Length: 617
Image (tube, rainbow, N blue to C red; front, side, top):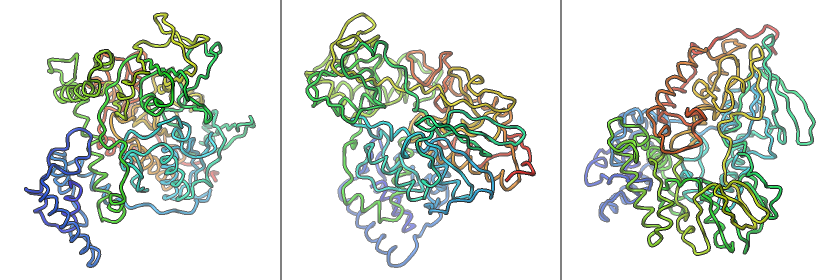
């Protein structure tokens, strides 16, 4: 209903749809609020009006409001969400609503401008390739896997799926009518494969090829990238611009010590064997984060016994339509009703992206900093705590260990996909201490207690703070990027560029992981920005675009100051966002709408520039 109201106003221009009795109730939590809290008779009026408006549009021509202003869209969104949506989000919505779906372009020929070498054919690399192809910029992608998809291709464990609604966790220029509101991994991998096929990207990709190092030549103003195939053969490729699109979740954490003595099967969630059989076996799952939360409910009915080892609990939000398939009727709306898909996506974007940002900022006057960072955070804590208690009613032993003590969103928020119901099963145990090592017959915890297991599944995550590892990158005057960053302190202007590394751009770099919502939108922001930079190099005859040190340093200072006022620096917990010194390295402190504005076109004044060599081809 809230989406229909937006559609009605755009199709008819009639302001009555933005006034009572058609005003929906506030959209609480992360649910879709499909009914809008409206009485049945009002909903029937809306449905009849939509049918008339769509029929009129189909028979008679354009909608009444074809170019809504930012103010109009902010008003429409505020009405449909039942809360105030700021004007800057209206500006973003206007750009999203007006953006065209991109069409396939022929592969650009080399010699027409800078050649871009992209490392990685996941979400970031594919998105950038589409934008570069649209702009006529020649490019090549090197991908170590045998197909596109990046981390989604590599992760194929049971239950693997998207914990962001699929209509939001997708690219604005390449829509899909999904089979479910939260698609599973196979459907998302298929989507990325279809993206590559639709835009003809595969002819630009070298599969089964890893980029092991890259060196910048100040004389030629080009990058040379050393490549290695799976059989060990090495070769070089040279390009004018280098873009790393290897993602945040590429390198796994170290294995649990003593794996060689274990007599059973030991696997990492990111390397799930296709032939692994868990039927009637005793299984240990090490970790209780996102991958564990998807694996446990997916396998609990197959195993003889299941032990989950948890270092600290996570905050879990209810997701009422997590398993709900898209009905044929709903799919018809997305495919045929004008504006419906984009208005639905705008509402999702507000709910899952910037709406939550208020709960992440520290209120220095808040009287209960131990349990929350502000009043909104405390309300979320009360909601989530009540939900956990309702799911674990009658199991005080589980309630004691599964309700976090730190503020909500201090760690990545998780969605309940049957997690608590699985942990309640009689053959499931939760152990609240970390695993220290393998034994011959199972695992031993930090306290010395031993637990038998025939299969151990490590859901211990990824080395997210070791950006670009193990690839080595050498810039101006031989500066090594990993020496600059150290073991865990990566920085970059806009998360994209680094001084002393000319013509190098990062995707999913430091401090761009969204605090809430979809990375797909961030990937589009970065792809648009990098494409604009490369087009500027081509059109202005530039051979060097290098971030100024003062611009970089000022940006990092502002990022750190903003993070000092965010929940992720709360002392009550540890998380993978912070490095050993306590600095937040992975997450962005900005709202999505702020980052969109920051990356809306390159500002050449932020860069040191040099003309292209006269001999450049």
